[in-house]
Image (cartoon, rainbow, N blue to C red; front, side):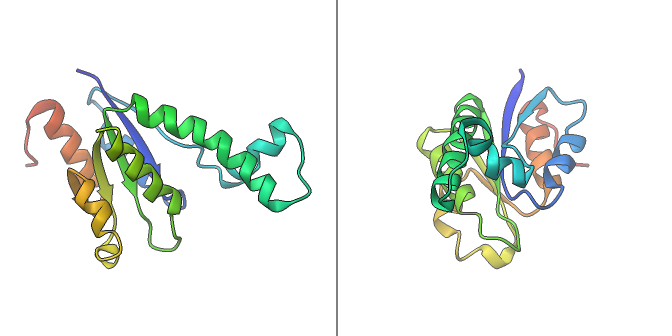
Length: 149
């Protein structure tokens, strides 16, 4: 069985790379949003033309990114959403809600300092983790039934 995993959320650390590296040898396909912050912000105006108003500049980019995100979440078997330490990831909360509404298996990852703020998001998740290694162990268990040694 191939597991399709969408990695959503915080883009300022290498947590995605850690999960992909840890899952080597497992039958997992990963997908993710564009993690180049400038490219993600500017995709709309780069493709459909400049906007003098920053609101419409951001609006165009958000709409194009939503196409990619919706498709990735809809095609996923498992959605992993990471909430980072430094930035507010409102889009991550939206992605978690969308995954839950679609009945996707949701894994949420954040530190203990976000526990209270994310209690409703955590309640929708099938697993709440703190580290990429925990996510890899979950994927390994789901695919093989093997527990960590």
